[in-house]
Image (cartoon, rainbow, N blue to C red):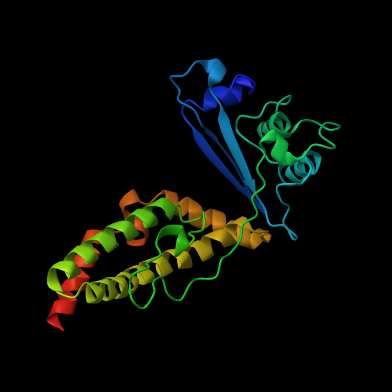
Amino acid sequence: MTSLPKRLRDSLAHEPMTLTFGPHGFFGYAVSSSPTEDIAKQRIMWWSNWEASPAPDRNTLLADIRSALLTHHDKWKSPYDTPEEPVFATIIALACGVEGEGREIKAWDKDVLVLPRRTIPSLPEWSTPSGKIILMGDAAHIMPPETGQGVSCAAEDAIAIGLLLGHYTDKEHDTSEAFRKTARAYEALRLKHISSLLHAARHAVKSKRSLSWWQEWVRDTVMGLYCLLPLWLNDWQYGYDVEADVAQYLAQEARH
C-alpha cells in the first residue's frame, strides 16, 4: 500500500474495490488486507482480463505480460490519475517492473499469476445409477468466475444431498433405494438451477471480450442502468433457497 501514489491510496478508504471496463477487457484492483493492520503491511491485489489467442500461460515471461498489460491499459484514465503517476500504468509497473526488467523472469516467479479461462463441457449426469457415488461442487459443475457462485453452489449441493438423503432413508426400508432416489432427486433439483447460472455466465463473459464501439456503448449503458436498480432485484438471478426448493420437490413428488 505504501508504494502506491498518495491520491490512489487515499481513494481506497472509500472505494476499496474498483473495476474499470474498456473496449477489450477490464482491469480491477482492491484492498486485500485488513485496514487495521499497520500501513506498512497492507496490500492490494489487482487483476486484468482480456481476450487472447492463444492464451498465455503461467510460464510466460514477466516482460511479455507487462507489455500485454500496457498495450491494453496504458491509455486508460482514472479519476485518481496525476500527470506523473497514472493509476493503471503505475500498478502495472509496481507489479511487473519497468521496461528492461524481468526479461528472463517468468511471471509466476514474481507472483503474477497468468490464469487462462477455460470452458469445461457440462456433465450429463452427476451420479452413478446406484446413487452410491454422487459428485458435487466443482467436481460436478465448474462455475465460471463471472457468476461469483462457486462456493455457494458447492454448499447448496451438500445441503440438498443431506436433506434428500435424510428424507429417503426415513421413508425407504431399502437403503439402496434411498440412495437411488436421493441421487435422482438431487440431479433433478440442482441441474436446473446450475444451468440457469451457467446461462447467465455465458452472457456476462461477452462483456470482457473485444467489443466494437456500439457493443461497448450498449454494455456501459446497461451497466449504468443496472446500478440504479435496488439490490433485491438480484434475487431473481442469484437468490436461491435450497431448503425451500427441496421441500417443494418432495411435496410435488408426494402429490404424484
